[in-house]
Length: 115
Image (cartoon, rainbow, N blue to C red; front, side, top):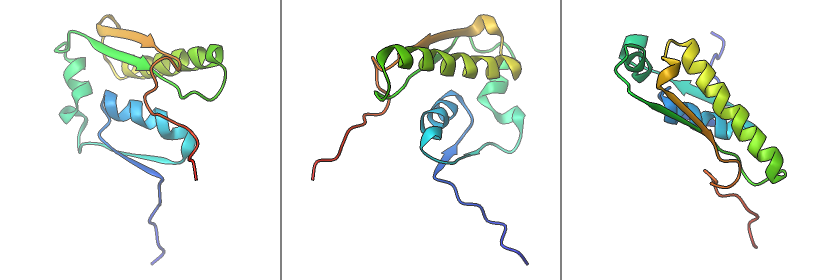
């Protein structure tokens, strides 16, 4: 039998906002696997689709590589892409609040290691 195991650099448990946001943050650094619940009915997205969520906040971030102007645009594209995906999954667009921070609020600190 052939080995069908796949290897990933990052494993994200859950496909909620936090999981998808993290997956977007680290996707530039390697391959990402997202493990979700068995059925869509068990998901928080399904909860939001049912009109139970009053507000879903999507915030785009970047690291500090690139110019500040580029990073603002990048974080905007990231936030809007997540929001579009949620709307495509049935979340009411009126429940979404979309914001982007560029590198003004780093989600992950980066820097050079000093040896």
